[in-house]
Image (cartoon, rainbow over all chains, first blue to last red; front, side):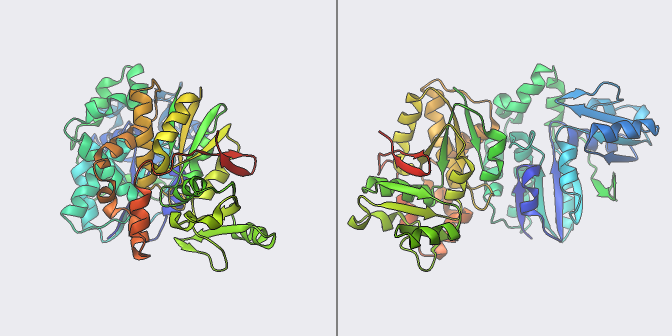
Length: 236
Length: 236
């Protein structure tokens, strides 16, 4: 089974192929929020690309999360802070969600054979899920507005390494090598490694250090959200 | 002055801005060949995107270089092996050139304020050129068919590091951080670091180890090719 890493949603079409599990990654913070939501009992989520669609879902009575540039869009229930999903109000609910980058990446990959949601919060669950599927894997980093980002790449490296060195996957892809090299440089202190990264600084300005620390802490939420039609649901 | 790194020609439009020097990088082998050509007395080069244009220039009596997938295209004078440009036949000539990735990157950047050609062969000359311009810098990696590659990224890191730590440039771009991290992992033995990279393996199959070793040896050709209209010429 082969591994590839795609650094931005813009490039997804160059990587699309059949019989592939796509792992969508937006560590800061959409996929961390989604994983946290399912771990806290959310029933379904509906990833959507635009604010217009979000408004439509809101009118229909859904709970709706909408984030742009790190902040909750005015008039919506939630943003993409994982802490927003840690309460009883979300339990059993179906929540529509749109974010700056993460839901755009899900949108780009929706034709893939299987789409799952990855973050450090469900790291080991992602590794287990992939090794039990008999498929190629594509890590699709959400990036920032179609530019490369570090934190999503580090997560791709964190998953690729055991898949290759323990579970017999291979990769002929330079971005996989880069992701593993960067993860090895970073793994002893992810928070410190990301000190100069663009998105950590963007969020630090919004006083979100607590979010960042939580999002970089592995295995807090051992669940796998998987795309089924237009819904994200918890994989069995 | 700010530094950014763009990993593929596909993404160039996201980075385009005025008053910026774009350094086009295709270490294996287009920009290494171009730098070698100018060092060996070529007068001008005409970078072109398609084989059709190459055929047209050939009909007009130009010497024409055409490479696709690592090999000289049948019927043309040269490919992108730097060794093809180390002889008296090229001296004083104007050569049209089209390659799989490198000339596509030049094409993508042609609206930039200034476009220069970078490779390990002219590493220190590139650093000197940039620090003498009073402009932002974008490193445009040619990659492989719009996918990320390692060797072009390493060169971006090799130039970015002294610009930032010695000459007061800054960067808020995660790809600059990644390029410098990867270069630091690789710099003690670039050849060995690239042992598993996709393009090194592609070229090794074509028996081009000698080309690769040459292309990774810094400062063999202290010249700067710069784009002026449709021509590449030697900067003063």
